[in-house]
Image (cartoon, rainbow, N blue to C red; front, side):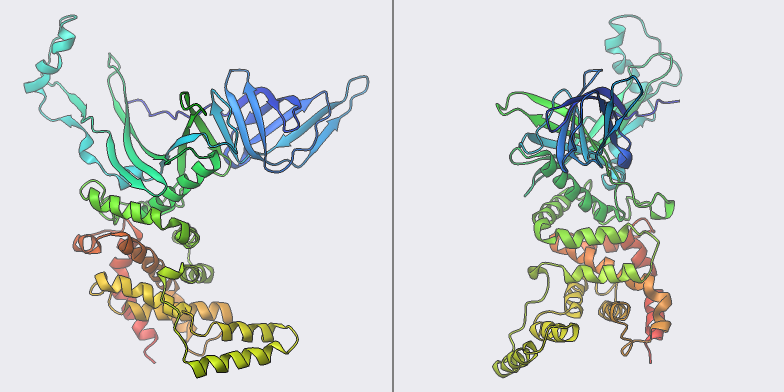
Length: 498
């Protein structure tokens, strides 16, 4: 049996001495358990309260340097014993812990790179031919053994086997607004012997900023790229094996530190039905590398303005196969928080129309503040600005321009989805008969999510015609939506026929 690829994460428990924000030193035990990460310190001296967002530094008895970043504590306590000195103690909860051969100052730019894995990297970067086995090794086994035979005789049997790695470790390398983003193979292998031989691989994503950044800044960039990978995979990614490369002020000394977030991202759904498949994902960085690099660079370049809406999309797909009014409302609201350049421009109202609006606003402003008065003023001031239906229609037009033949009447689907959203938010059912649409809520939700993500990728440079020309299964949200679109659209047409 081949050996399992063991995690290179640090031990989960560190005993040592810790320096608190007030300079006081205490003995403590740090346990790294995800959201349960906790440092317990105790001392014979009084322990002052730990201020929120403070930093604690420690040195484990085994030699590791520990930096606890963005710490919070419910306070300190004391324990009194008869005929014994009073002991003081405190529980401290950090958001990040770095482990390595140096401490870091959270506010200092010292990080030159952040490296991590996500759940579906092997699917997203399906470099199938990078590793393999030679089917007929007889013709080349003597060449392989030439070096070993210089040391001692090695006999060849009837069924020789050869495993290989091509040695091409870099899968993609993209220059983006946040820095260099690259993906690499990181194989591990044994040196053979009577127990056998193996080659195992881990795919690593690396981000190297243009200049040194703080640890929090590096984490933010990591989460941005993980958001992109989640959209590409069709499910929210888990993040693991996080490391940062730190550089001294002089630029000469570098250290690699393991990073343990207290709230590490976990994969949204481990079920087989939501597992992405290499043939279904929209991007193919192996066979269409240039397209992938263009999409990633453009997507990252727009993240500063698109980030809030994309995080909402990520929260939606975390729901996996769970649907309901809340998710449909959230999916519709993604379009409301898109940046100005992603939606239709505001229309200039005719002068007389604008004058009437201003007169109405002035009259309403004379009344005492109240819910109806404030809402009327707000609605009047929004005249001419793109409404939610117009924003959704604009994004649908982007998808229609490339995939209109495959998704006919997508504009109708988008309009009905927005009307359902209005019903859930405002309770207004004048324009729809919701009981007839109740069973179509999952389809309408999927439609909004597909429109959002597909239009985003198309604007970034994705070639949907290539993806649409291939056969697909259910290994991605795009593929699942495509597979049941025709039948669901027929159901929708019947529901709104009257």
